[in-house]
Length: 209
Image: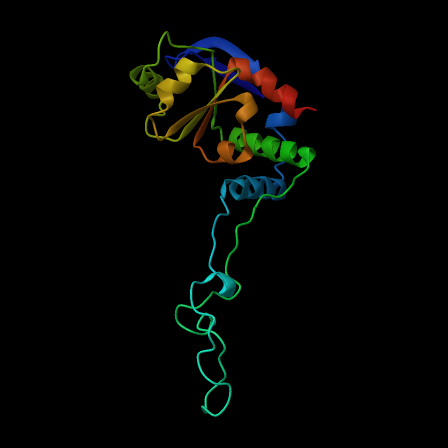
């Protein structure tokens, strides 16, 4: 598929680029997308939750009443989970929520995400640009020129550009990443995907393996 190339002022440069059909025009595999997004979100979980169990609660180990003759159930410890202030039965323990996915499936998921965005016509190809110094106002002007000031956007650079990244860092609705940092979740969690020309070859090369 062909997409016109815009400059950072939002004007048509008169050039067009050919997006690979094997990356941007496949039949999306929804299950692959689901698994990759699920893995990404699972990896964000710290898994540091912890509840004290019977052996960890502070309290006396004295038997609180005699075994027989009270007419009530026997009880051997104030730390019994059945008592107020006792331990927690089967409480949460620190754990890792991460799980493994094959590289081929993750590539399929990213290609599916790109294809979904392309089908929705939410991909913008922008010529490479940079700033002499970090300047949020300049980045906002780029967003306005592209009509993205009130939309969630993801800018994908071919290589790291510190000034562009720092210029966007204060904006909640816009993110800047390099092609190597792309994830299926990041692609789908945005209204418009802005691909700089320098990133296209790297994206297609990485996903065509």
